[in-house]
Image 1: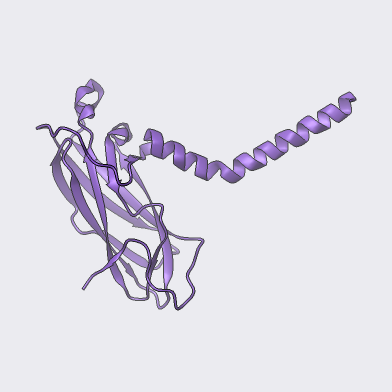
Image 2: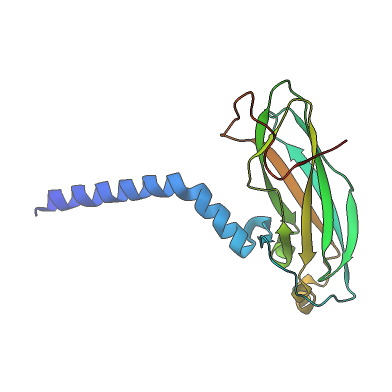
Length: 191
């Protein structure tokens, strides 16, 4: 193999590797953030039981919502904040209404601030990263079950953390429904 052939093979291999990395980067980044809490992403433990001891230290959890400008939905937390003890399960609901005249599928992402508290904020039930189809004019409610890991209390770096913000943003999903498709996801209709 000549030097030119080796250089060409190496260049093609690098180009294919970079293209593959670019294609999978969002999935890899989302997975990395969910596992580590990096970038304000709390741990997500689907169907996990909270076996933590509940301690006296309280944390105020405030809820925030955002909607991408191209998604005609209204999105609000049903309560703006609640106070929980570390290790205690909390449950909050978010209301979403499709303001358009057609069914639309959206997907939510989330983050937690302050960023250093994110690894200790654990959601055991969540509507994020799952396509949610909402019919025209339909309003639904999505639950979130969470706890703040009492391990955070052992870290002097987290002594001043008294409030945590859980923020969700809904975006239009790439997977849009057929006009006759029924509402999906984990939503429950509001009366």
